[in-house]
Length: 382
Image 1 (cartoon, one colour):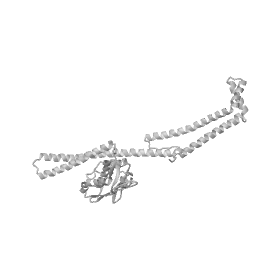
Image 2 (cartoon, rainbow, N blue to C red):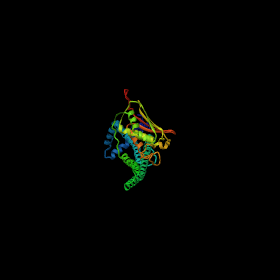
Image 3 (spheres, one colour):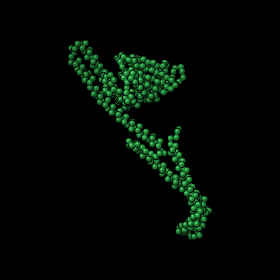
Image 4 (cartoon, rainbow, N blue to C red):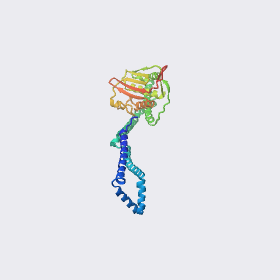
């Protein structure tokens, strides 16, 4: 692993060398000037006076001086060097402690949600950059969470308002049917059909409420097994024929045959179902939706392509956020809680994959990349 704190390491090495050199220099100076050098006599007289003031006689003081500073000179010098080294090392540790305190203050600054940039010593430049990135990332997540909560609240208010319309219609038509038993059969059948449509729309709106609640409390757990991906995509096309026919749209599956993948079939099918419904909702009527799947040593790629209006880049970057909708208003055409793509991203990432979207003036493509767990039947495992 690359050493990101090289400057700090060499600073510590140089400081250790400086401490050692300073200890030797000061110790050698004391040895030369006080014990064996030009100040030897003055130092001897000073030491003898100190010992005599401690209660020793002149003779005993001289004997003790001889034993400690003459005969035990080496021990005294080593002890002095050790003391000096400890003193200088302590000063160095104090500097390191100040650095740790600075890092601790920076972490407190992040926890207090301060917007001020973090500043550390030059040797801690890498840590300074990392802490500033952490601060920016936490601020970004907090902002995204607040925006998501705001979108959720707006969506709930819209859903609550939208519930009134079909509910009022259902009540009105059922009341009319109940109060007019003599109504002609053809007219009764027409009103019954309208009531059913309104009830179905009411059910869809209620399901959106449940979807919002489930997304906030669910803890998705994958139950993986090997499935034939090409067969899953073909089944997806068959199951959504009715929905596509309503918009005069077609779906073509171009999948590599016998393409197998380890996944949670139910949850991955939900991803593809959400992508197909999204392509149908925002694609032009009378156009074709193309689903492609290819496998290789680097994994598998599934692409959903539809012809429709270009999605602006700013919206494209937020399209997988919770409760985000491409269109600003709600309609029966594209109305929804804005959770389909967010759930799709969560499921794909739990599989170790990545989902993305690109859009131009003609097509919009949703791309799912799953890790190399795919295999071609009769070939090597991916």
